[in-house]
Length: 356
Ligand SMILES: Nc1ncnc2c1ncn2[C@@H]1O[C@H](COP(=O)(O)OP(=O)(O)OP(=O)(O)O)[C@@H](O)[C@H]1O
Ligand SMILES: CC(=O)N[C@H]1[C@@H]2OC[C@@H](O2)[C@@H](O)[C@@H]1O[C@H](C)C(=O)O
Image 1 (cartoon, rainbow, N blue to C red):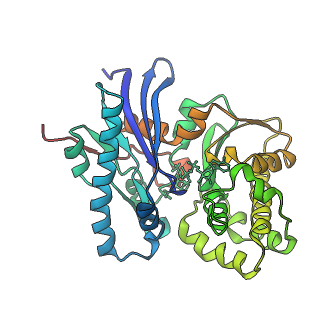
Image 2: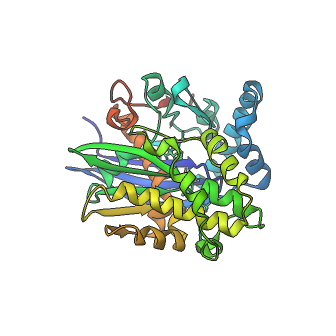
């Protein structure tokens, strides 16, 4: 008999590099899954780690291995601190995504750092991690993985949309869950606003003062990725190749770059959610706080944009990685073939038990 209650710590480090999201969650299974987030916290990266993690694409494989070891230690310390700070006593498992260093699924490659076995030793807890590798081995994109959580934990919404470094979306088509990355979001906005000395464009204020450059907007909207069908996913490499050089070639003022890119995001998001009429769209991720972006999105759609509580906005991904870990402990499917394009649906993630 499987248990029906799990207390886990979910851990996620997203592409925007704003920090490590940690949640302590209680998952309960009755006729369907429910959850309660007990504690949630984001531990910001210091500038030293931001620099390192920002430049991972240019690392040699040896340097990456070294960094993986030190990042695993660093991550373990942060998780350990979270456990102590909240005096967390009951833990079935720590379920951790790590940080994506390389993601080229079409070459059979995806690599998340922070997932070395020492994490279980340092924490002295069961750790479930490395959720993407098996999917790529089965021919899948290894991403996005959150949609199984959307399906089982947030089934009342027609779409779940996350606005993080990239925008990703999930929905049911003929009662089968599909999901894909839509376009880059904060990974691009943050890079340009940094040139003005800010980490992000608070509420989208700077973008709102800019002007759309129609030619750039046109060229962005015409990128090949947007014509491809799902499954499809984006990585940093794609942005470095297709987005930054294109934007830079226009030599625009930063506020105009931001304004144009916000319009691009709104158009790409709307073109996806408008595929269903009278639909509800549950929006999470830090991009929700970009008021200007949300307003631009609303002006391109008649569908209902639902914004949840701050806890869910900020911790939904960490929550779902906790959930993926629970499903893995139960040996139940946590990677959907219909989402990633793998040869089968499967239960993914490595389980490390500490030598007690
Ligand atoms: N007040 C705000 N105004 C505008 N943008 C904001 C605000 N607060 C947060 N953001 C944006 O949200 C980002 C963080 O979002 P989030 O934590 O969802 O990203 P992530 O988890 O790194 O990404 P991913 O989902 O791609 O892994 C910030 O880097 C910033 O760009
Ligand atoms: C390879 C990788 O880390 N991909 C991330 C990234 O950030 C957003 C988007 O690109 C998504 O595909 C994925 O993360 C989410 C959490 C996912 O797997 O569902």
